[in-house]
Every structure is written in structure tokens, then in C-alpha cells.
Length: 169
Ligand code: CO
Image 1 (tube, rainbow, N blue to C red):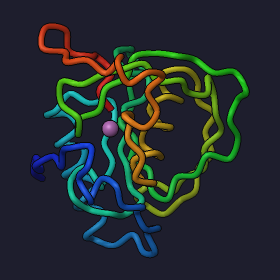
Image 2: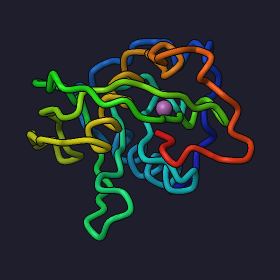
Image 3: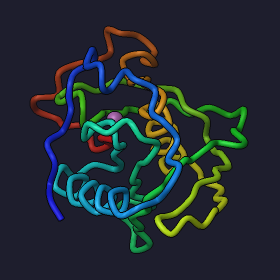
Image 4: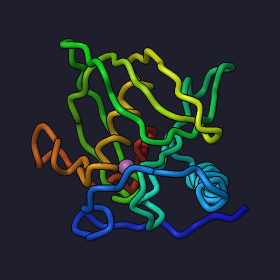
């Protein structure tokens, strides 16, 4: 297991590339998942996508129910949102690949998601609020989309020297 270097920058071509579907969950993918978990924990993130460690495959890790006793770290492979609420929530959001930047992003309040776990089993989950936000942020990473593309107003992307955004994803 290892903490990997983070790919950073809004114009980085790795972060901007659409990631490919995982065809086979082999040893390499399982090792990548373990390293991504270490990297996310070291960076104190709520999630991390494979593109953020330089791999354009549809894999991400999320920390669900963050800060509660039900906190769960879940690897997700080939995740797809199958339903999204019409209700939207605006909240502050940061990204591990855009250090010291944060802004307000509007996201669906809840969603239904389908994904494969590291054993290749398919699961469906209904998620709300911050959990749903984290998933939408990660799916964006898989599609080469960053929060700078979704900010309500670009002026709101500020340097957070004194007050780091707690929701770095
Ligand atoms: Co991010």
C-alpha cells in the first residue's frame, strides 16, 4: 500500500480526459484501490478518483457518512447514476486536485447509483445530501469535469489559505 502523488491543475490533460470502463477487476485494479484509499486518507479527502492519481479508469473511492459513527470507505468501479432528484442543493465544495480553491456548486440533493465493488458484485445505493454530492463530484472526475466548470460564479472560487474547505473531494 502506498500514498500516491496527486495529479493537480484545472488544465491537466489527465484530469480532463474521459476515463475508460474497467473491463476486468484484476490484481492491478485491486492494488490501485488500496493505494487510492491510502492517498484519500492521507489527503483527508471525502473521495478520490483514479484520474487524480494518474489513471484514466472508471474507479473512485468515497467516504460516505463522513464524520459520523457510520462512516464507510467504499471503492466503486464503473459507477453510474441511474436517477437524480430534481431538487438541487447549493453548497461549498473543494477538490484535492485544485488545492486551496473552493466555490459553491449546485448538485442534485439525492440520487440512485449503480456500481461494482472490488469483487465485481453490482450494488445499487440511494444517497442524499453530502453523500450524493461526493458521488456527483467523482462521476464528474471520470468524465473529465472539474468544479471550476460548475461554479455558480467564477468569482466565488477563492483562495482558502485561512479556511480550508472541509469538503475536498
Ligand atoms: Co475532486
